[in-house]
Length: 354
Image (cartoon, rainbow, N blue to C red):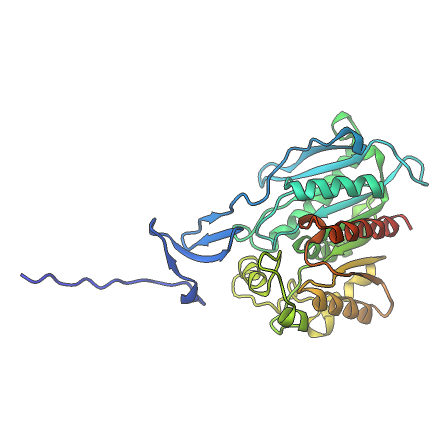
């Protein structure tokens, strides 16, 4: 007796790319992967290998910085790591500038507890003599944009609420902050978040008192577009580069709202002659830090030129760091990278204290 063959019926999500489909022994279908960083399966399961160690807030005593973790929203698991210099050295009495910082990772990976960020931000707080709040925001694809932007706004609102309530033993660090000198900062995807959070709160400046946004610091900000720039097309990247055009495309597919392409304003703010950048006029100063060997180099230069064009004044200053690539300040321990990191910190220190 012949057995009848049963047909296999498979349904696919819209815009599904068959070349990305891989069957695993566990019968899971892999949709997207950035090797060593993230795997996203069709059933919604997400795996993030522990490629970078997570560490506690403990710091060496000789650094002169104390660190601790605070909960911003226990329901969405938003928290932040604080870095507070023990000795205040500034011209504004005993008050320090505040940097609200967002880590990188393509919106999909990374943590405020990653050792590379913990060490970099502790050093930045010590040398630049500022208080830093490093926000651990929600990640895509479980929480697509604008979730990270919402978390950034929520972190600012949390600080304001604490200030209005008054200082106590739990938030005594706020007593060291000069709230007329607050900056939004971040690297890579964190730079994108800092920019978009600033855009979101631009119309609420009066409602944020006593917090005054004095500027943004965007380190290799992660932007993109459907049309490739020269550096995105032709920059030669080492095999283990922190960012390639292929990985960037994957991050955007996972982070942008479903159905959006890379010309969405959250990804490509310079599109349509920068019409969405007009509101940056309300930001007193913008510092953009660009890496010469980064695929984002030309995209970042385009962003700066468009910003200055739409604002009718030069509100943006940028610095080009020679001989280094994407995320050199947190992922590269070479002698050149260490020298450029020292330069980067010096530029940030000058920017927030001018």
